[in-house]
Length: 421
Image 1 (cartoon, helix red, strand yellow):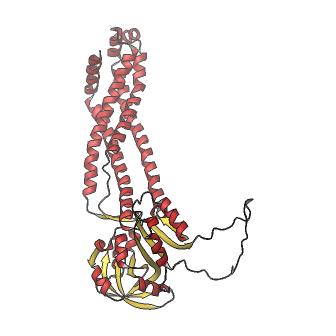
Image 2 (cartoon, rainbow, N blue to C red):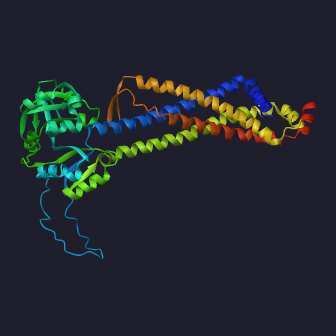
Image 3 (cartoon, rainbow, N blue to C red):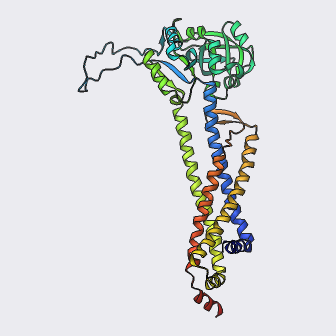
C-alpha cells in the first residue's frame, strides 16, 4: 500500500512541475538565506571571541580598590562603625599601588597553573599631533616583553619590529587607525600632549594592526614613558593585564584575585558585556526569522497541495471508493508536503554552502562591529544546516495537513455525481 501511495504522490508532484519547482525554489532560497545569516552571525561572534581571547587580556586588574568591604549600617546584623572623612576633595585617579606586590601574588603558588602571563600598564588619554593634524588617542605604557605575552603585539606589526622599540628612547608603536588619520609612517616624529598640557616627542618605530578597533586606535609606549605622561611614580600603574589558562571559565579566578589583591578584577566577558549581549540578541532575532520564513515556505507548500486537492477531487473520490481510507488520504498529501519541503530544504542547504564559501572568500576589508576584518567571518557548523533543514521540512509537512484534511472529508458519491452532471 505504501508503494502505491508513494507512486501517486510522485505523480501529483510531477503533474504540476512548474508550480512544484516554483514552490521548491521559494523553500530553497529561504533556507539558503537563513543558513547564511546564521553562519554570518555566529561567525562574527566566534571571530570576536577568538580575537579577544588571543589579542586582549583575559582578566584586567583595575586601580579601583574594593577593600575594606563597606559596612551596612542599616542591616540588622551589621556591627562596627563607618566614618566619612575628607568627603570634599578632588577625584583621585584610579591606580594600582606597589604593583610589584601584585605581580608577586599572581606568580605565587596559589595561582600557579592558572595565570600564564601578567603585564602592568599605564593608560592616559593624550593628544597626538603630527604636522597640522591632531587626534585624541589612548596612550598605553607597557613593558614590551610582558605585553608580548599578553597581546602578541609582535606578530601584529605591519611595519617595524620590537627590537627597535627596546633600543629607541621614547619609542612608539602606533595603531594602524591612528597612523592613517595622522598620516604617520615609520620613523616619523609624533608630538604627545599629556592631560596636564606637557608635550614631548616620540618616534614611531612600528605600526600594528590587531583587528580590534579600540586597540588599533591607540599608541603603545614604554611603561616609564606612560608613567611620566600620566604623572605617576615608578611604583604605580593604572592596571595589570593577565592571561589565564582557561579564559572561558575565569569568573572564579577573577573573584579570587580580587580577594587576594584588594583591587577590582574584570574578565574579558565583563568588559565586553554590551557587545556579547548584542550578539545574543541578534542571534535570537535570526532564530525567530527561521520560524517566520519557515511559515511562509509552509504556506507555499500548502498552496500547491490545495490546488492539487481541488484538481484531483475526482481521483481522490475514486481512490476512496476503491477502499482507500481517510487516514491514507491524509498520509498521501502530508507525504507530498514532506517531499516538496525536503527537496527545497536540501537544495537550499547546497546553495547555502556556495553562498557561505563565496562570502568567506571575499577579501574586502570591512568593519564588523568592534572588529575590522578582511572578508566575512563565516561559521561552517553543520548543526546550522541540520537545524534549518529540519525546521523547514517540519513546517512544510505540518502545512500539508491543511489540504489533506479537506481531501479526507470528500464524499466519493457526491464528488462523482457532481462530476457527471
